[in-house]
Each structure stands twice: as C-alpha cells, then as structure tokens.
Image (cartoon, rainbow, N blue to C red; front, side, top):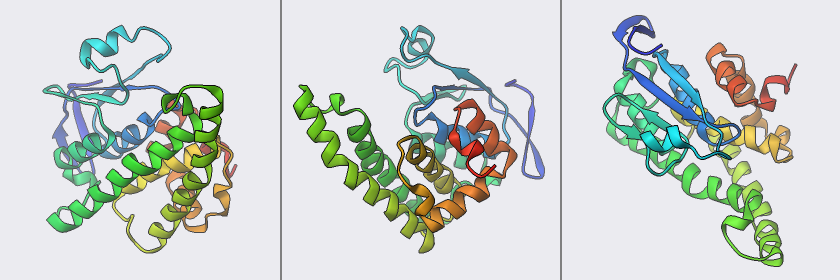
Length: 221
C-alpha cells in the first residue's frame, strides 16, 4: 500500500512508505488507531509474539511491538509513534500545534505508558515482575485496585478536558479495550464510556479494532 498518494483530511500529500508491526491484544492498538486517523498509506504486519519474530527483529533489534518503520527510521514506543505521526501529518490534528498544549498532551500519554500500562502489566503478567507463584499472586493482587483507580482517573481527566487531543483520546481507548478484556466494570465510567462509544462509530477506528479483535466492536451492538 505504501508509496501511493494518501488523502489526509481534505488535502493530498505524498504518503510515507510505512510498515506497522502489531500483535493483538498488545498496546499496538494505540499506534494503529493513530495511524488510521492520518489517512496515510501503510502496510499492517501482524506478528506472532510466540514465534521467533525474525522479520520484526530484522527491522527492530528489540523485537517489540508496536514498531513503525517510517522509511527513514524505526519507532518502537507508542508515545514516540503518536508524536511522530502528529508532526508528519499535522492535518490529522492528533496533537495540538501550540507548544505548551502539545507538551501537556505528551505528558498525559507518558503517564498512560509509565503508570497505567505498567499497572495493567503487573496485574495481568505478574511473572514479569517477580519469581514464584506466591509472589506473583501478591503482585497481581496489589496491582488490581491500583489499576482500577487509574482507569477511574482517566474518566476524571476526560471530564476535566485533559484528554481532548485526538492522539490522546485514541491512546486512552486502548485502556478501555483492555478494561473490557480484563473484566473491569468500565461501563460504569460515564465519561470514558461516552468517549469510547463516540470513537467506535468512526470507520477508521473500527478497522484498527477489527485487526486487534477488540470486544469494543460488539460492546453496544
């Protein structure tokens, strides 16, 4: 798909030859949601993380998803990917152009990465944080209420207007998706649910959700 002219907003721009490496149900959903918002051409490449990841490692030695090969470099962190897309495709308005507002948006995304994502990982994959069944059970037990508290904090931030940039909202949708998978009552989060329902109506969002087999596709059917 890359190499053709892509329509972004109401203008035509030369597309970047991009490849996006993803794997459900990982955080690669967030980057794909941002990619789809740009309207740019890219090749989605599904990676089986249970395998040797040879094709992925040929592009990125760390062997992680998400990975965005831009044609000039390879980005492997969600915040970096969304920020790069926002700068490369400004018509998509993923992040604010004004310096302070853009920094605030990056700050929120960094919190999602460094706090909410880590708590979710501790809850779901405690073996990455400790050795032994007893220790792992305790790690998961401790993380559960803290993870839920951060999901509720997202709800408050949406209500307070701290998650208005499109890139931030699409990143936040990842955590609603995970909340459903992890059996948290995210439907009780009024503002978060309202945002999720609005985004799920968008065709480009649905495409990314389909590629990640998201339960959001049938949440309000």
